[in-house]
Image (cartoon, rainbow, N blue to C red):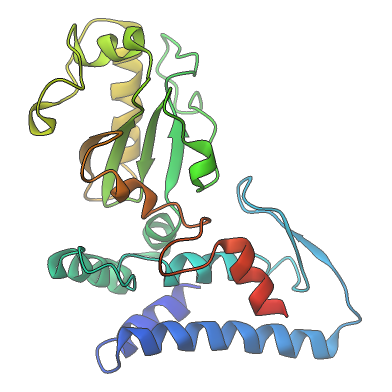
Length: 250
């Protein structure tokens, strides 16, 4: 996967990005076709970190490949959204071209958590973290607080009906929806939830050399930034992962 990503990025220096994306899809279809020619309709389970469960004709060693290709072509680098700035695309181009495999996988398949309904411990243990969620909007709700990170930035998403008791432990006694977004920041308060979540965010920051925290409230102008990383969903420009997978194997 690391080879294909870096090879495609190098091709991007010479060819249009749309052509690079189509070449990746063609390679994936070729792999399926060749494998089907050599096998007797063997079926293997595809399940990436509690992701969409689908039957794949590929062996276990390659079963995640379609998921990663789907995440690659849905990356900000390739999206047709004209609101994404050139500087942002350039940043992702550089990272996918130069970073090691672990950071590339995080960029392509972000970590996604719900943090308001987790029982935070007073002990700071890296293994005591919320369950990682599949990258689909079905896991978002207006009564929750969510964290999504792709190694480049951390998005802190607050639902419109998120519990005020939880928010007050992070932001103090304010209504987070009544102040300017640019003035909203996590406070350093002396309570278990605050300490635990700051430790959790610090742990996420260690996964990459750069991690900017952006707080987004439901209804903010930039709330679509969260949806840009939910790679299993259908978007204006791309099918859902399920649709992509079915198109590849048929």
